[in-house]
Image (tube, rainbow, N blue to C red; front, side):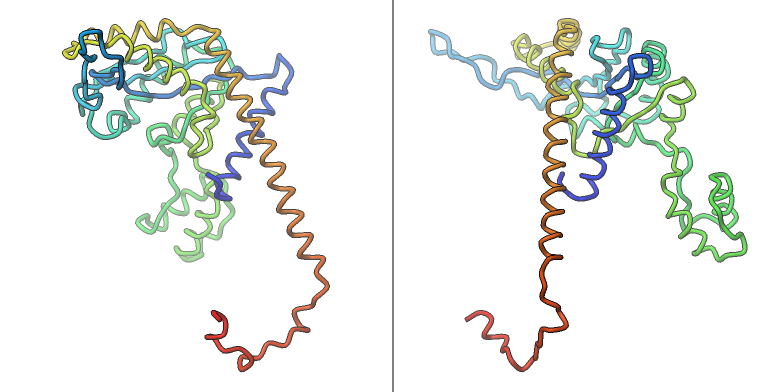
Length: 305
């Protein structure tokens, strides 16, 4: 999470979302966060009190049984109306829930349930899941013909010499990865919206993650039967989602904004620390040319004495 390239993406994300929030009310874009999660059929509390007779609550294996996938979106005003997509996973509770999602299913939900129900000029914020990020114009590779590489460069207005060799053209193409276009982004833009992606590994910047935790806690508390039916679990899920209020969303938005501010302060301190470190080194008056290092002066064994 603190790799330089990840930090660079994080700081850019924080800059862009702060820029949107500092706009005038007429220019600011409503923020809409979306995400997916899962609910297991045997979702329940892992520990419970014993009864007076010494009996304990149900011992359900939360990783067993069927699994529901939940797709939804929300803002500070609450869940987006009619945007809930709840379906049963074909893979059961095996593996990661991402195995049950694909680009076609997500795209259908995005076009039919999300876009028609959000405010005009919204800023849609999502993570970097593969089905969120299908590329419309992939950068050509060695498997492409030279004519295809030239076509990609031309269609993306990249200056190039068509008479250059294929390796040279591929090198130029790779230097223009910013020309990549995501299918979802283009659809959103065509409908008057923008897309902003969370930094990799920073799901905590998405308030809906806290909403999921609240919903799952409610389901576990009420899913007490060892042989709970799928229909009952679905009903419990829908009821838990309905219990989430606008105040809950505002509370979690506030918590995420506080976290963002913490990272902004850390980034300022981090940059100041490294700048000071560089300056201190630069102030060293010793010239490396003045140091006389002779290989014969030091025995490698002496280093460890």
